[in-house]
Length: 425
Image (cartoon, rainbow, N blue to C red):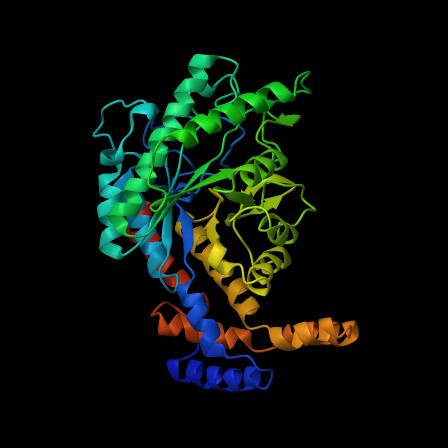
């Protein structure tokens, strides 16, 4: 397959730049904003949410990775190698989102409430060498003390305290990441607590969850180095009828405190719900937002992000509302049915393309039309923008960042698969 030469990319970009300029859009300014916007890649795409705590252990807590594509990472070095390959094929500089089960304890068993920054030292060294930030998550699933379906909302005080302690040490680890890497770490709490069938008492578990969160957030940590986030969910496998940490619970909790990020996961709502419409609403109540960009299909199935209308709507809302400075963008899916490195690259590049398309909208003219009540003109212009040469601007962005233009990245992934992934058996 043939791809454009650098000269062709530059020529096409020059024409696109002129075309956008007629609408008052500065493509260079859009590219500068795109370059400055980091996306946090989720480590769990590389090994199907396995982690290194219990190799071969199964997933629990409403989570399932489907597929058996060969070559998944079996240890931290392999996972970092795969991530390096993905980062090389994605334009500009991005972050890593890490889960607690990816600790490296030297082969020694380590309870999750005993983890410390030293168990992630290799991750910090790796990130520092590349100039990347790290975000972090407690792992409140796939553990004997989560087997009953409850963690921070457990009716058992001992179980509840264990998970409180785990979340406290994770906040401390996140702060250590922020200090070591010079960029604040977003530490996001998600729990799988809930019931498969309809409960009698919906209030009690939520009261216990609020008390647990209060205890976690009272623990001292330097908040200039870590941001606390909480993430809701509609349901999961095994908890189809009642989720303790619902969107409404966390929205109310975060709004009451006013020092938390609210996480909106695109796969954690009804299939016909769009989180784009929620962004401006929740940012009136909370100071900052964490987005987990995913693609749910009928349930929270976490498919690879595609260049869909839903994704474009999310990015449009961030740009139109001037919310980029208050929003942290991460990806969250785990597709084991295709090449895992390709899944990272395809999903992240799609997220960037959707953001670029939003940045290239003739915002001033569209806003003026709307304020004047000219909804006909607004619709006409919005539809015309869909045919503008934004892809030429994207190609120029890739070339300037020394990553493959178009689908040329797939050749590099095929080579990596043959030389590295295929050797893993």
